[in-house]
Image (cartoon, rainbow, N blue to C red):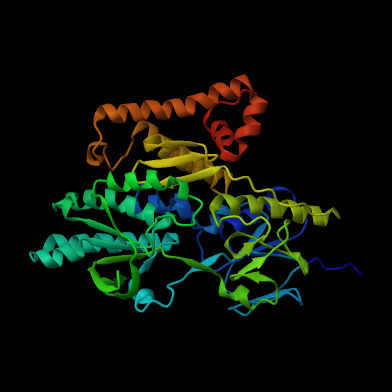
Length: 471
């Protein structure tokens, strides 16, 4: 009697889960692949700021899983995972479905935590998904329209004030984006953009404290001061309560209130609580894994992304780490099916990328070279767009983006609106041209070295898409 082959089940459609599924499908994996995710769309989190601002479109940053997985061997199941039984190798969902697996990948990610702050869950707006980015954009437009219609200066001040809780990368990138964007939106309505106020509220005296981007602190602080509207920083401010129109916080043993018409929450996340129910080793809610990303007592189960940690070699919960973990898990799953031993995952940290306003960013390459301004912005978006999880989708999005960036087509934000002169805009375009021309020369002169050194950036794939084949 032929033994029935149970599928490989992947829980969670974030970077780690989705890329595991896609890499398995691309390498002729012989077993069925099931991806279970409660949302119908993939949120490309590093580019949510571009979705908010309109620099990129919804189909670019927030595509449907059905579109991304079309033509692959992956079966997509939109459902909520209800329970995981590692001892019986099965997963159940809220709709009543039961999945028996031969291998399991836990990539359920993290959830926003409000640290039990009264009113935060009701009145603060999180910013971790495409849906939330779109909701924040609609809310901000509504506040601006309310402000332009009111004659009461105190009420208008409240409507035009944004409070962002948390000065980690997400809070900083959101603050810089809104400090450039909202004055432009308000000016277009006939308002005075200088009335906009952006506050970044931080519990400690340091931004990016304990973060992988902490060495960019000086660059970030300068950028926040040089926005269309400078970002105001509130340090040593412990938020104690959120109301519909304000933030209550403790500062120097005194209770303060900041009135704000928009309150965004970027102060922290916690691993998916479902994983805490598993009877396996954990560290602060994250599953402890071997260097191969397998659970020590359940070698058929892998865990990655925000919900996993290798205590000997901890990695930050970033997109580039999750992307590499997904690729590595797929390789190890294939090795297991070929009766080969699994191999440790080798994560290569290539530096960090941050958005510091419209058309401005910083690319910190290999933690040695900082490329700032519009050149940094181009490198950041170009690199991230090359990580989009489908080659056809990737090619279409990247081509559209390059047309907009390099040829300035259909731009809703002009250089003059951002305080740039035409001369500076020309310099930025020349710099962008140089950025893309240099790899072409290198590829032509030393193709093998070029491929080996830059494959992680996606630049070789980008050039393959945009230049005629030499074959």
